[in-house]
Image 1 (cartoon, rainbow, N blue to C red):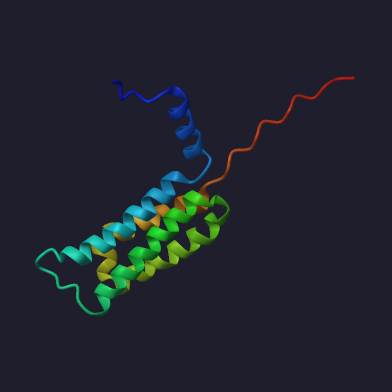
Image 2 (image 1 turned 135 degrees about the horizontal axis):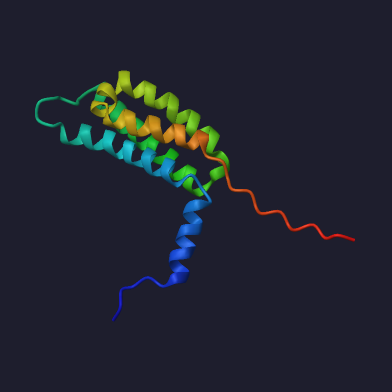
Length: 130
């Protein structure tokens, strides 16, 4: 039994990925998961209890939702990009330096990519001469 991906499937995934801000959604989701994981693990030398722990979980979930939103509804990329940019700045103060700065950097770059993404225009049909 072969595990090779058929060319049609691979082209379909590539087309889906290129028709939306894929990298922006990926970075927003990873940044949200990083905020949650850092507050969950605790790293042994930091105590993530109280408001910082709650803010990490809340902001992490919102970042993950913003990333999924940019994938499934690219028309809302401006809303989710601006929301993620503001939340990334809030995470610096509320969530222990934005998950030790890694979560902040992932979400800041993801929000910038969401705001900068422009959909590809369909090629114009050739003009016919009369």
